[in-house]
Amino acid sequence: MTHRLAIALLLLPLTASAGPQPAAAGANQGEEARYDRFSKRLKLARILGLSEALDLNEGEAIKFRDVMARFDERRKPLIKELRDAARTVHRAAEGDKDAAGQADQAVQRIFEAREKMHAIDRDLYQALAKDLSPARRARLAVFFAQFHQRMGKMMMEHRVGLMGGMGAGGHGAGMHGGRGPMGGQMGMGGPGPGAGPEGDGGDDLFGEQ
Picture 1 (cartoon, rainbow, N blue to C red):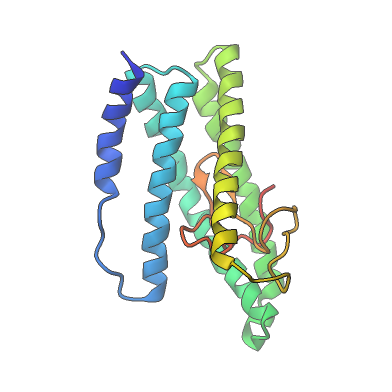
Picture 2 (picture 1 turned 45 degrees about the vertical axis):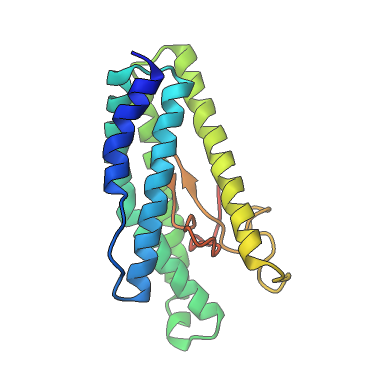
């Protein structure tokens, strides 16, 4: 089975689910809809890239897609937790008195959610790697590392372009360097809470770990 046929089979259901969506009723709904479309595009790039990197046959490609979809579902509530907690901290930093009283707890929730996300990434790698040869397991690990680097670079370039002339007043490197003040999280599941299509710097305060 050729890669081209496997790609065609995988492309059809994913692109069908990523079709045009009705206008959102509010700003938050609009943001979530944009994030959802962006996430679907990255997930498609992820499975197509894996198919090529590991020379997956049709059955393997479909199996990988389905396994990753299950782990993506586990990530969803954690992504929401990260986004909500980070927004609370930002409001506190901007002088919101109500948010200031919740800031310490919000920061703690961010660290706890990130730990859980890393655990999911580890479980995902193990689930995908368990039936692979040692060489293909190594290729799997290399693919994810390179995929994250490419996606992170693309999002950073997009953010820089959108921010234009905005200077160092709050838009310098993040805690891990080279990213915006909040950074974006790129786990094995694809984009995390900071990977929004608008390139707004994201909602994960502590960037990529």
